[in-house]
Image (cartoon, rainbow, N blue to C red):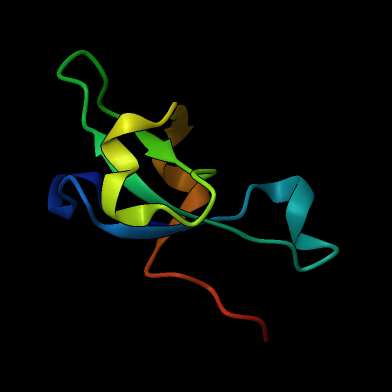
Amino acid sequence: MIDISKIKIGDKVSYQPEHYKKNNMWENGLVKEIPEHSTDSVRVVYNCGGDWVNFKNYTSAMTRAEDLYPGWHHGE
């Protein structure tokens, strides 16, 4: 799990909620926003067609910090 107090916009994160674990599935993304109104979630861009330089121009998903890990996951 990631420590929400230590992340910043642009950080690479890996998403693995409980239902992904049995199949060792991961999604990589970049932190787009750290909402002031939330203490347990951040907004993450997962799909940008590889255009990571412009990730701020893409739709993000509100994601629970407990499902995020620092860095990108690249297989086992």
